[in-house]
Length: 271
Image (tube, rainbow, N blue to C red; front, side, top):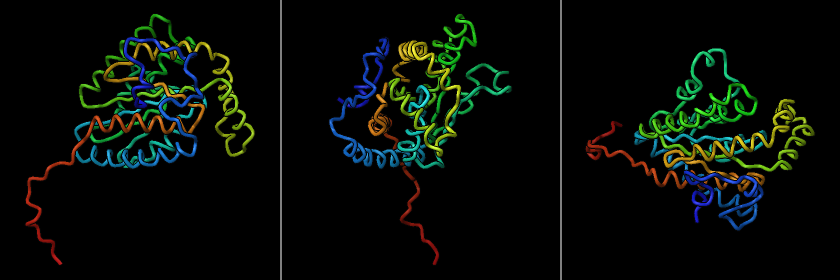
């Protein structure tokens, strides 16, 4: 079975995150070195796909990355998204909404960053923060955030109907692995800048976030905007699996080189 088949959250089902091994490597039997080698041709394939996507300029691709702190979103951007030409790719990170953003509905800032035809958009965190952080930290009443699952599905269906392919990844790490990564941030002076004391508060709500993610994955994995749960304790597997799913998506989209009506053979380039 393909990475997509193994990792996709089937619409209408509820994933059991406790039953999914964050250290697992479903769909790949090799070791770390083999994983690095397997990633190389996928990066080449993704680069070729982007050229055709840009040239055809009929569809766009939106990649959503969600994870708990230290889950590896930045790593995926460095190791996988970097296969794309930055000229046609836009990475948008979502933090605490600005005052201007708070004057609008929660999807306003998201829609503004959706990729145009021929382009690839990457969301480092996303509109799902409004059913995750907002829910766990009780920033709005339950009666408000519970409505957002259907609103998000409608929003993503609207994007899909207008030419945007959506692929969403939940990078699933273990509590022990998160602790190890936090420790590295504290011990390495070159990574100290990544540390935030707020990460400990989030970690203290681990079970609440697991419940919130489970509901988001169950309620918002649809045919047009599927969720994929990627075991992410092993960074090399995380990158390989994400690239594998994206490559399968690229093959399905299969953008074509435009056909030129003009007879190019008749063109003479002056000396």
